[in-house]
Image (cartoon, rainbow, N blue to C red; front, side, top):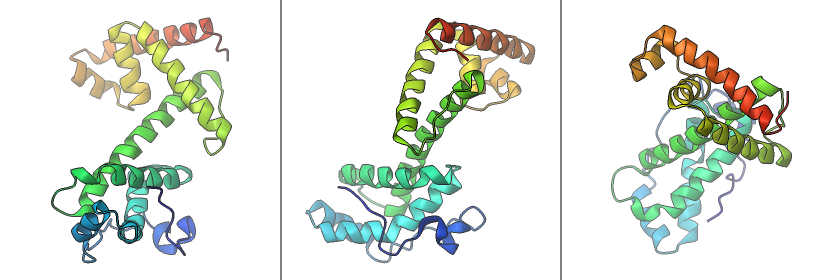
Length: 209
């Protein structure tokens, strides 16, 4: 079911949401009958879904911002999260709806941040970018992700591992060394050659700086 921003909600213009990264993240009270609303939603009551959505929209928004998603991407992430929630309502069985929703938002944010990091890596190497808030930007981002994944598959396991963990996951040399069991100097060497090979493979695919 499609979800829309609650009436009167002003996004970043809301002084409460504007402080979302400096104030403690508070869970909705669920006193409005979160579980009861879910039961009504399952029975096909669309008004119950609208109530559930309105009660938890600010929480989902705050969560996405708190987890590091750029403000320009938050609206899409919140809408996608509620769409997933609607599709997966049959899996919600007990506890707080807000806790269950938090995990969905966290997963959606994680995917979006990963895609953005992949795109940023490609842009830093080749200086190609389109705004993500445009249709061209979204198409470019999907294309970039496919290109990066195809190139990574051609790297050796050690180089692919070092490149992905450092450039995409944002880990330090020391953290990568701990995860892979390699020396820090070895990680740096693998990363150096991985970057060089990545750039060469990209050029072979017609992607030029």
